[in-house]
Length: 102
Ligand code: SF4
Image (cartoon, rainbow, N blue to C red; front, top):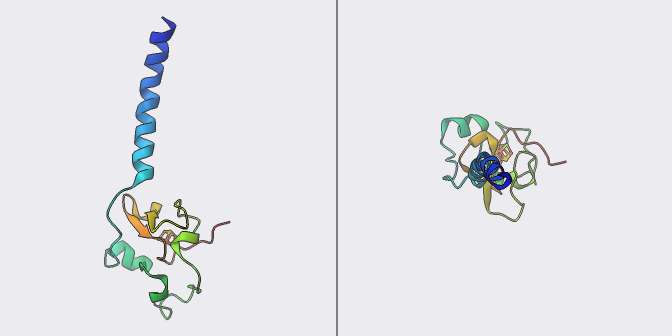
């Protein structure tokens, strides 16, 4: 009986883990700079192309790869960002919500 109970307890856990893995993987399309939300945040796939007049907060060296909201590794070409659910931002990208990783 113990093994049956254990099995029943594992099923919801497995489902939760599958959902988390799906969310973390975020294999979605790359964020389009022309997407209304991306445009509002000033997202660019190449941080050096940031409109410095419009976004004076931008400083050279700031990229998604060094942003607190970016869970990917700095060496990854792209990764998920909670501001763009299900999509990928470029590690070399930038937006006005940038917050330096601690
Ligand atoms: Fe990139 Fe950070 Fe903006 Fe997300 S919040 S797009 S990781 S700079």
